[in-house]
Every structure is written in C-alpha cells, then in structure tokens.
Amino acid sequence: MFSWLGTDDRRRKDPEVFQTVSDGLKKLYKTKLLPLEEHYKFHEFHSPALEDADFDNKPMVLLVGQYSTGKTTFIRYLLEQDFPGMRIGPEPTTDSFIAVMQGDVEGIVPGNALVVDPKKPFRKLNAFGNAFLNRFVCAQLPNPVLESISVIDTPGILSGEKQRISRGYDFAAVLEWFAERVDRIILLFDAHKLDISDEFSEVIKALKNHEDKMRVVLNKADQIETQQLMRVYGALMWSLGKIVNTPEVIRVYIGSFWSHPLLIPDNRKLFEAEEQDLFRDIQSLPRNAALRKLNDLIKRARLAKVHAYIISSLKKEMPSVFGKDNKKKELINNLGEIYARIEREHQISPGDFPNLRKMQDQLQAQDFSKFQPLKSKLLETVEDMLANDIAQLMVLVRQEESQRPTQMVKGGAFEGTLHGPFGHGYGEGAGEGIDDAEWVVARDKPMYDEIFYTLSPVDGKITGANAKKEMVRSKLPNTVLGKIWKLADIDKDGMLDDEEFALANHLIKVKLEGHELPNELPSHLLPPSKRKITE
Image (tube, rainbow, N blue to C red):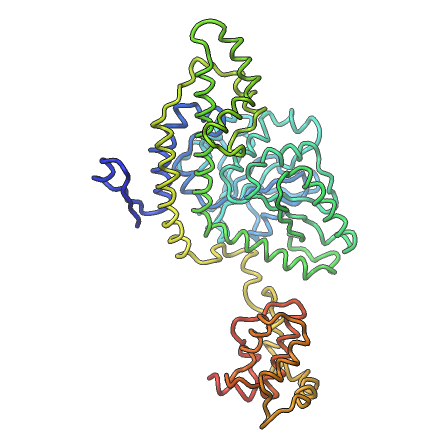
C-alpha cells in the first residue's frame, strides 16, 4: 500500500491511497490527464480515451506478418493446444483478428459482443465499424499460458490492392490501436519468402512509435542450410534497416516454432538458444507489465501536452470574423513552422510531436473555431503528475516487481524446457557429467596430473603463485580466473591439490568452450575426496 500528499490543501486533508499501481494509474489518468485530453479534442486526433480495462488487463502479445509466415502455428506451439477459430495452411487462412484469451470454457465471442464487455480492453474498437467487428473474435479456452498473457493473432498481410480495398476497414489503423496497448509486438518472417511487400512496409512504419515493444522472428529457419541461413539473415537485417529507422539494431530470433522434427538439424543448438531467449523475453512481460503501463501513460501525457500547445496556437492565430477558411489553409500549410515555434518556446523535444503529414490531414476536417485557447491550469496539473505523482508511483512499481517471480508464464511450450534432460543446456558446460556415476573431471585427470607434477608440489599441493603461472596460459581475464580459483579451492587453504588443480583446468575448459561458469560449484563436480568436507 502506498500514499502521498499533494501540494494543494484538499490533498493535504485527504491523502490519496493506492493499493496497486493499476489503481494509481487509473486515478491519475481520470483526474489529471483526461481533462486535458477532452479539452483539446485529443481523442479525435490520436487515441480514444483509456478505460479501466486498459489498466487491468493481462500483458498482450501481438503477432504481425505476411500470410503463411507461421503466426497461428506459433500460438499453437506456445499453448501446445488448438484454440477455437484456428486455421492453418499455406494459403491466407486467418482472415480475422483473434484475441486468444483465458476462459473457463472453450468458445468464440464475436466482435460485436466483445466491444460491449467492460471487462475486456476492446471497447474502443467499436469506432472501426461493422466491417472490422465482423472480422474480430475472442477465442477463449482454459490454458496455463493464458493465465499470464493474452495473444492477438492477425490476418496475414496481403500484397496489392486487396490489402487496401477488400478488408473494408483501415487495417494499419487497427494494428496501430493494438500496438499502443500491447506489451510485445512480434513481427514474423518466413525464411523462404523474405520479400517484404509495400503493404507490410507500411504496417511496420505505422508501428514506428513502438520500436521498444518490437521483436522479430525469422521462422521456418530449419528448412534452409547454414550458409543460406546466413545470407537470409543478412538480407532481413538490411531490409529492416531501411524500414525501421532506429539507431539500435532490432532483436531478431531465429528458429522454427512448431512441434515437427527439424528438416535440417545442423543449427539445432542455435535454434534452442534463440528459443530460450525469446521465451525469457515473453516470460518477463507479466513482471514488467506495470512499468510498461506507466511508461505508456507518460508517453501519452507528453503527446497530450504537445497536442494542447498545437491546438491552442492554431486557435490564437485564427481571425474572429472574416477570412477563416483562408487562414485555416495557411495555418495547415505552415504547421511545420508552428511545431518549430512551440519546440523553442516550451523546450519540447522534436520526438514528442505527432507526425506532421498525418496531423495536417486530420486538421482539414476540423472546425478551428471550436478549438480552445491555452488553459495553463490543465497543463500545470499534467506537469505536476509527471514531475511528482509518477515519480512516487515508480516506488510502488518496484515493490510490485520485487514480489513477483522472474518467470511468471508457465505451461505449454514454456514448461517443456525447464527441467529434466531436455532442459536448455542440460548436461553441457558445467553441467556435463551431471548424471554420471564417475567424476567427470577424471576423464582428463591424467593429462592434468602431468602438468601438476611439473609445478613443484609440496606435500601434494601447489601454491597459488605456481597455479597462476599455468592458469594464465588460458589467456582468460583475471576476473574469470579468480572465480575459477574460488570454485576450485574447495578447502579454502590457498593451495591446490591434484584434484583441485584438475577441477580448475576443467572449469577453464568449460569457459573456453563458451559456457558460463556457475556461481556455486555443482555437487557432481566436487572431487570424490572432498565430498565429506562439504557435507
């Protein structure tokens, strides 16, 4: 539980108490940000008003890609279960937006019923009309994965006029609506069909304000040889570099996300490592959900502030009686200059401004006489929220995060590689020999003994100085060698006997092969003569 006092008398008398981050965000939005949005018609230009369900819903993952890149199969792979409305095939099969969510009973909720459910975060999709709602459903089913996250399956992006005309609704605008509200956007590419259509490029550009949520999956990578895979990966990065204009390199996961045997198993270890990285990323979403919602609210508040300055500036420039239409055209044409002036006067970052071309198009249909002049109190309230309330709420975010497990998403494909011999990295690196009856280091001990007896042992032990001379031959940095020394010097006497020296060399070998060292020595690596010491 968390509380703080505001600056005005009313809040001093009646301090706000928030049980959760979600409660705090809802209260701050309704009392501080929403009045500013409504006063300057923010919802007509940018994004509909937020509702309680937007703050309460589980983390959502949005899958986007051209047709037959494996989006639906990817969901099936994660859940390890078919879901209602699922269709898989080489042709464009998924023709609807499908929200795959937790439910007690399997079934489909149609779009028109979905947008009137106050518990679901989809009510504002009503604005896209029947053409969209007829192509939007919620697939509900009991599944352990869906207890922590929800997944949005999207129609495959088509090429040519069909993409723009046949759908009957603004596809890119719908995707942008989802992108604002989801926690992760996964772009899927088929390693066999890497060409990015103009329509897909436009969709990616429409999501450009959400690069922090974007991840890329190069799917079906088991169907091509290693050399060809390198070329495909390079071509994908080159193509993305032209579309996603960010200084950072977007994260690309390579693999084959379905439960069939690998066609070309040469890169199995790479695929397993990439899959684990992607799974860890998805598993982190529930833990970071509160922080993501807080971050999105801050982004929204900054945009709402800029929008207020733009609208009030346009209002100020408009004549009171004559020449309104001509002045409106002039202001729209000179909007770039208005942006620059606002940027200078209010020290606002250029990245906080809405897209110039899009804003000009939207202003064409607006009646400037209905715009409101600058109301400082509304802006000061939002400034106070950003400067004080949000900073205080961050403390509660950290508290909630610390109370949650690192990996909250369980079940389905996430369960298969957690434990047992098929767990990621099981029996490799420091885990080699974990199930063997014999001490794994004993295999190479004769070779290590030869070196040991050249280092002038006294009473069966070599000094740290002598051990160091041999260990630095590995060319590993001192920080790593220091950790190996701590792990190998089991009796902590500052010297190594023949078994400890063999263990140190084994750990050096593990590190040189590219594996991580354990923080504590696993029981199977303890030398047989030292096992009583540690009991």
